[in-house]
Picture 1: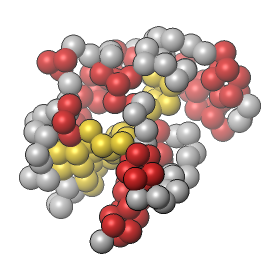
Picture 2: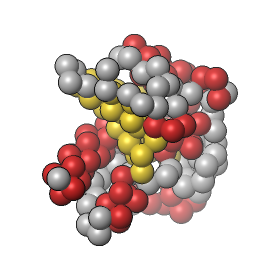
Picture 3: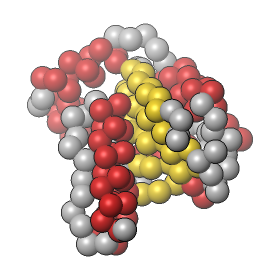
Length: 167
C-alpha cells in the first residue's frame, strides 16, 4: 500500500533539540485521508527569538499558550503520534511510504527525541519538499498558518502542485 505522511511541527527554536509544542500530520493513501493534531508542553531548546516571534502574532501566541496549558508532555505527544502512524499502516517501508516535510527540519527534531528502533518511518523514505521545488526551479511554498495540521495540509497541496509541474 502506498502511503504518504505530511508532517509539520511547531517548535520553540530552529535547532535539532527544539522543544515541540504542536505536531500536525496528514496521512494519505488511495483509500483514506487521516489527520492528526496534538498540542503539548515543549521540552527542549528554547530560542528567545522564536518566543518573541510566537508572541508577535496573537493567533500563534494563543495556540502556544493552549499547548503549554494542555498538560500533555512532549514525550506523550510523540508517542501518540507514533501510535497514530502505525495505526494507519506505517511500517518503516521506504519503497511504499514517503514522509514529506517542508525543509530538513521536522523529521530530525522528532527523530532526536526517539530511540531509532521507535522511528515511525524508514530513513530512506524522507522527502524535503523545499529542495524538490528548488530542483525544478519553482518557488512553491505552503501558506503557513503556524498551526501544524493546517501547515501539513498545505504541504500536501504543494506536493500535488509539484507533481503537476513535473508531468
